[in-house]
Image (tube, rainbow, N blue to C red; front, side):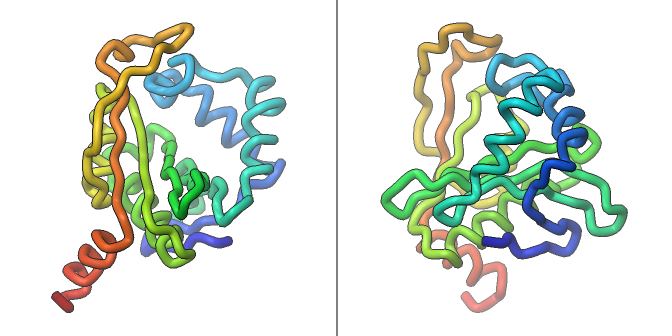
Length: 186
């Protein structure tokens, strides 16, 4: 249940000692802008809800993995795979603002896709708000394709929800094709 390291990123499971890293990540208003309530999380929230959820997530080949910059040891954020049933996983990621625009999101997403497909997944999906251009770009650069836009009736909508959510996907055949092209065997 490990994620293969990349040239710049080392992956590991979360531990209880990661609480301060998660508080800093989820406490950043810009990081949380398009997530959940659109507001930063409190330390209490992270300690009582977020961290226990992450620590209990390692089932069915899925889970959350801390992404660590190999060169410096800095915490970059996390990547996630959640089993959705029927050989399908959902991909997620969250990065500290200092890591934005440096290609880490795509690198993390590709590593998680490799793990999912190496472990037998047939399909991986990802979702974000339609207005979250950065996240959509990561999905596209990682090889996922746009599927649909849909509207969710949130009880306390955040700015941008009126434009809906978007879903992307990649299946095992498309993944193999992309890998063959990248390896030069096609």
